[in-house]
Each structure stands twice: as C-alpha cells, then as structure tokens.
Image 1 (tube, rainbow, N blue to C red):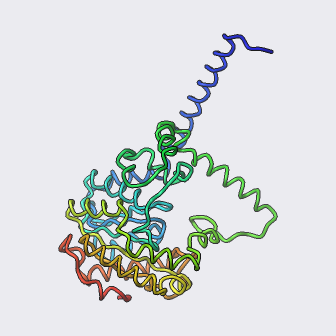
Image 2 (image 1 turned 30 degrees about the vertical axis):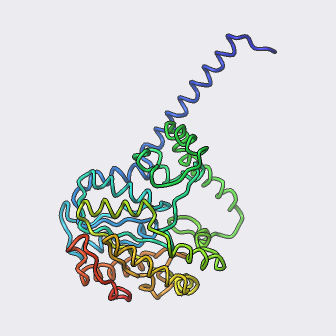
Image 3 (image 1 turned 90 degrees about the vertical axis):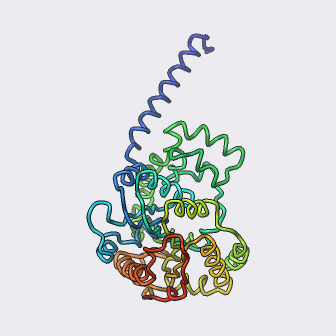
Length: 340
C-alpha cells in the first residue's frame, strides 16, 4: 500500500533515531578500545628515558620489566615504555610518538624496530583497511596524519564521513566479536589450530613476501627514501633532542635464509644504513641475534623466552655503543652486526 507523506517522514525519523542510538551504543562499547587505552597509558606516563616504537614484533619482543632492570631504570619517570602496537604502520608510530611528546614524555633514545622494507614502503590505504588498531587514524590528529599516507579521492571523501561516526570508525570492534564467533563455529569438530596472542599462527606466514617477488621489490626499494612518516619521526625526535636507533628485528632461520641473506637485501640494508646516518640515526642489525628457532612463536614473532634473550642483547648493545648519550649524533654501527 502506498505511504502517505506523513508516514514516509515518520519512517525517516524512526530510522534516524535508530542510527543515532546505534552510533551512541558503539561509541559506548569502544570507549575503552585498545588504541584508546593505549593513548591513556601514554598520557599517564610522563618522563621515560627510552621509548620503543613498532608493531607486534616489538609488542612481544621488547620485555619492558627486563629492560628496565638491566638498564637500572626505576622510579616514576625513569622507566622505559613500549609504544609498539600490533597491526600498525609508520604513520601510527609517528602519531604515538607525537602524542607522547605532547604529554611530557622526553626520551633520550627512541628504539624503532622494523620488519623487511617497512621503513621505505609508501603507506597506501583504503577505508576498508582502516580497521582494528588502524582505527586510531580516524580520531588521533586525523588531519595531520593524512599528510603521511595516501587515499584515493573516493576514499578521501569517504574517510571524512566515516571518522565522524563511531559506528563506522569503530566498526571493527563489532566485526571482531562476530569473527570470533564465526571462527568458533567453523572450528567445531575440526582439529585444533595453533594460536598465539595475535591469532592463528599460520596467518603470519601470509605476511612474508613471495620468494620470487622479493628480490625485485627490494631492489626497487634500495633507491627509495625513508617513507614520509619515518622522516617525520626523525625530525620530531631531533627537535626533542632524542636519538633514534632503527633495529632490524630478529627473524627465524627460514626468513633469514630466504630473504635477509639474499644479495638484494644486503644491498638494501646498506641503503638503510646510509639513510639512517643521513637522518642522524643509528642502525642495529639484530636479525640474526636469535639463532634458536624454538624462541619464536610463529614465522616472525618471538615467544616469551625469546623476548628476554633479545631484550638482554639489546640493552647490552645500547650500553656498549653509548646510545643514551650524544642524541642526534650518528655512530658507527659495525660492532652492532653480531650478538653482544
């Protein structure tokens, strides 16, 4: 039956009310999401002589209590903090460091752990990819962050709409719960799947590049500059009189054999060293520090025992090379090639 004009506008009003309520409900559910809790933690941690930046490799690989003990850091404002977050890229790392600086975190040293060609890969996103921990791009200095990654014109327009609606910007908070239920149902009656704190172990093999595509990709990157977000990290750290050290994170033997022992990677590593020196930063090649593959929980992440080993070696390298002094002055990194 045809609707009267009154019924039509009444339906629109009901729909609008439902959308407002749904938006408020999602905003309420996500008020303590991981990125928001993370930012709150930064705001409540002034001081900190050392901060660590990066993705999940640093989340599990940098053992803060062990590091503080080894460096004899104790007391308020005298302990290292870990600003790494899983599933993030250099743009988010820049935002976290900038947020820390704005909340009186004044480190002498910034440890930036990275994987493969992350330091030079352009950050190109679509709105469908800004989910999970990437949600921070919607609400932490979004106009500033947009200078450091690329969106298509269509996605740029969509971004401006999405970031103003919690039910869209934080949509992954709902999707994640649905995905957990879906996976549990799909696993019913099936053999157990190996998992760690980040999800299914086999999923992380997908993060590795295809062997045939690796050399051309790295060869192309060997002439590329640092991505703009990484350049800005160096600039802001220098302005804050903090020294930056890039850390090529430990990898299992398979990854090193297939990729890091490749002549293309060796040339690329030399290129990264030159870029780091030009930016006043240091470079530590820690990729081969952990020779025992049993200290990894999957294709790229250290387990708890491996984290302790890596953290001890990193602390020793920082002390040996005196990286806590002379911020902004590049030093020779030849002695940092091997394990301490």
